[in-house]
Image (tube, rainbow, N blue to C red):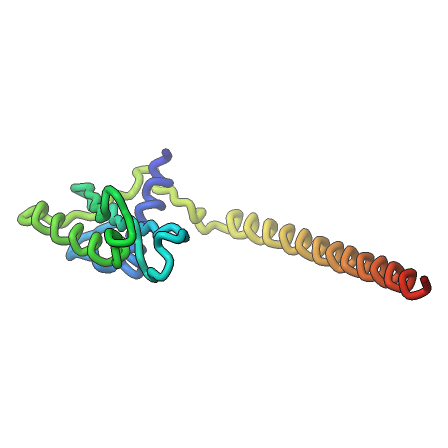
Length: 170
């Protein structure tokens, strides 16, 4: 994986903790992570149970450490299931675990790639022109598709009218 892509992924996963489902894992240092919840199967065994889950996860990392928390039962049944999600208890446990493990460790930031590149382009006129050209091409493509869809719909309606007329005359 390119360093720029890894950095972009870290930025996205920091957003999960900063403003998404992983807010319970937020600490006084940079944290990136992902929540996960496996819903109960839609089967007779679990009918009547709402909001139940088989598994709840939080996997995250700081610039210094990586950690994962899983909650669940080896054998899930109608008496053994979770009523939480990955953003709740697993994220809180992750935060506690990492806080203890990093106690006394100076806060550091995720390192940016040495290339200085990012996936967002470098903001120069050529990048902006390229994006504008691509946007125009997509707009043209969408307009052509819309026209074709309208024509196909009209053709189908005309065909159905003819078939309907034919049935009425019989």
